[in-house]
Length: 161
Length: 85
Image (cartoon, rainbow over all chains, first blue to last red; front, side, top):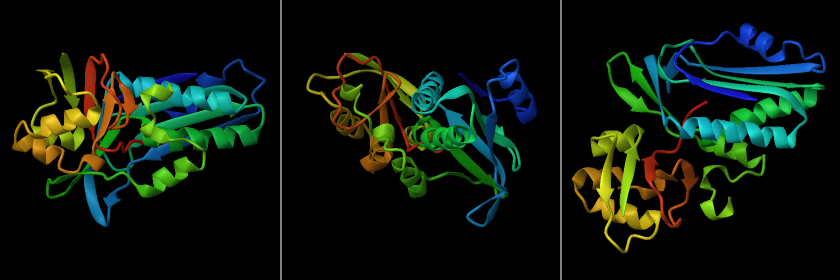
């Protein structure tokens, strides 16, 4: 189980090799890479800036990863999320789920993405060619995706912990 | 009670700072109480919290609801719904 929050880019192939090295129990590796789209609501963007909450970000990602391990028989997982100023086409996030069989790996990778999108404290700002920056709105569809996993998302009460 | 407040994304931009240390008066029990008190501190705060349903909170780096008691919290963060991934 590994999580990383970094400004630097990542190499998917290198991350898979490192995560699975020496573990021949693994029979399935699913990776998801999120990248910066070149346009927002039809307007081309020149950059996307990701702000985050250092400390809480790592804690939330670790919690998300731990929850996945409680739900599926996973041999290895990795979450890498970037912050700072990114350009269209750049990598934003990497999720890897490795298991004996494919179903657990596919489902866990999707779960990790749905859950982190609703809980990890990151905020995207898109800047268009005119120099205007706009904060990206949270999407209802992301919350609907989360509901599928029977999670309350970020509305957890502390009393319930 | 002195607490460290942190603001992120457009909440930070509207308030005009990324954080501050504030002494809270007695009577502020919940997150919602704190939002009401902050909103009365000035127009920049009123603007940031104009739509309380669009502002999320974390107590000591855990997501909480408006009705959550502050308790003996040290760090309180306010931010828009998250948009990572």
